[in-house]
Length: 101
Image 1 (cartoon, rainbow, N blue to C red):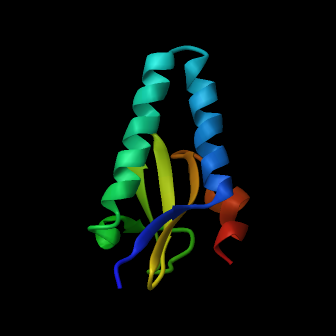
Image 2 (image 1 turned 45 degrees about the vertical axis):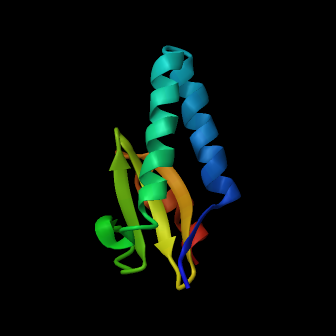
């Protein structure tokens, strides 16, 4: 069975908040960031193990890809790849770690 890509409601909110923040200064750059995030997330269906294991968690099933200065964090399941959070690269995962329990 092929894996499907899903986004948690919180990850969607994360992306919307990032887009809103960036668009205050540059709507064009905000659009580019969103487009790149979606493209990277879709590429995970073909190569889910391409992301590195999230260092703070050490779980082989929870990985991340960097997109510009953001961490796209996802969980690999048998039938699904779940994008669980998008946070700034300088931010620790503490604020969103409950999404992986």
